[in-house]
Length: 422
Image 1 (cartoon, rainbow, N blue to C red):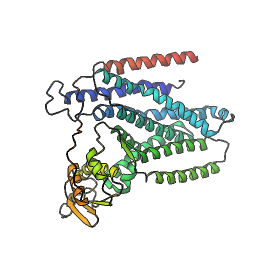
Image 2: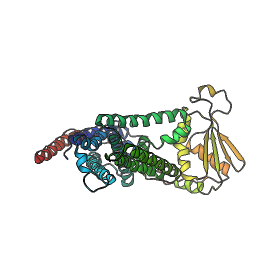
Image 3: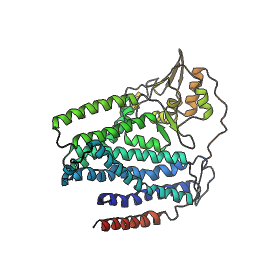
Image 4: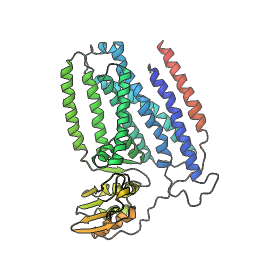
């Protein structure tokens, strides 16, 4: 409460979430038929993608560009003012001290999350549909992302002397994760697998209602490791060489645990429309396949058909079949000059000596090929079809709440606390 940086962060997150929410609701309403026609639209509308994902994206931006400065101020401010030396006199472990500060920051983040919760209340007042499991999933994803930000900021603040240097290091790591995602989109392979554990990819999956156990456990390992690094380097009386050895041992142990967590293949789809999963009938039929399935995709990493195939079919297939192996084969990254190759664009399905070749990248085409190569009859039509929740209502009152009430309320509360301290 004494941090001016946190109060400024709290003032800014309201309009940041507000502009995302207002834009999302307007787009959702227009597509649902506001000031036009709703014929042929609306059946596939999900508030998870249409409203919650863009609204909570404001929290993602705040966690990447605003919240690290609050965390660095809390961790490095004591070191610069000399208060850390007084803290070290108390009989409390350095990890417990860092964990306490992290918990305080996490409580501060929860207070900032009142802004998207205000958006939820407004959406409910408009008559919008709310599916609690997917909303809780989005909330938990951003809470995990904020915890990663705190751990990174603490580690950077402990390894550097100046807060500005710590801010640059934190920003460099954030930009580095974006570069990793860019390289993964071009190169594929192990780059693509590593990019799946970046904070951006983690938040994106939570915003689609998908919780992967491997990603959650790896994030928790990184959070604990960040706090541990901060605790090691905040012990000013310990020799630097010893702290360096302890840090190397910590990194080695964390890498070993992360490798083990990456082998976990468990996930759950909390989205109402099951956008990350096949239909219940298809999943029941696919689970009857016990033989290993090998899929060989002859598409370049930057070919849009490959992205469509992976997003719409293979990612769902990986969640059902434990004995699935997918290999991507290409000579170039863009695939333009591979069109003369007769095999380019083909998808090979191999199981128990049988082979089926297809060029269809849609979900229906992939399922048809899998059933054919496995010798399993496809299920009948699934009557449980998600019809969506269209809502042709403008964002009434939202600008007043996020651009007026929120900043004024935060400023008044901040003034009260600052005055009570003096």
